[in-house]
Length: 72
Image 1 (cartoon, helix red, strand yellow):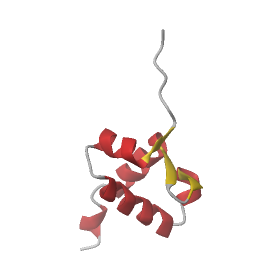
Image 2 (cartoon, one colour; image 1 turned 90 degrees about the vertical axis):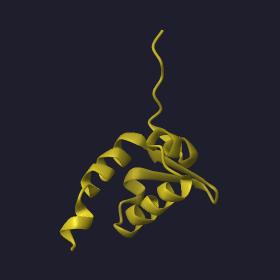
Image 3 (tube, one colour; image 1 turned 135 degrees about the vertical axis):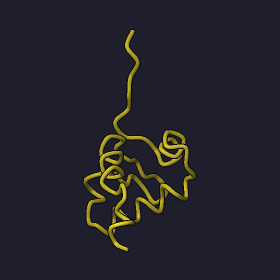
Image 4 (cartoon, one colour; image 1 turned 135 degrees about the horizontal axis):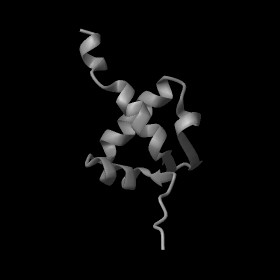
């Protein structure tokens, strides 16, 4: 039987996948929101429930790679 890979996961699960804290993920979500891409990558199901598309988040993170260095 095949294992099911979820497309959207809660912030706590995404933090475990990336090996980071939930606060780190929330900061990245704020950056995504500031870029105007929140609705593309995340779903807000309630005031305390945000789901994040795993593959789109990973693509966004790859786009951030070395971006901090370019700003210097």
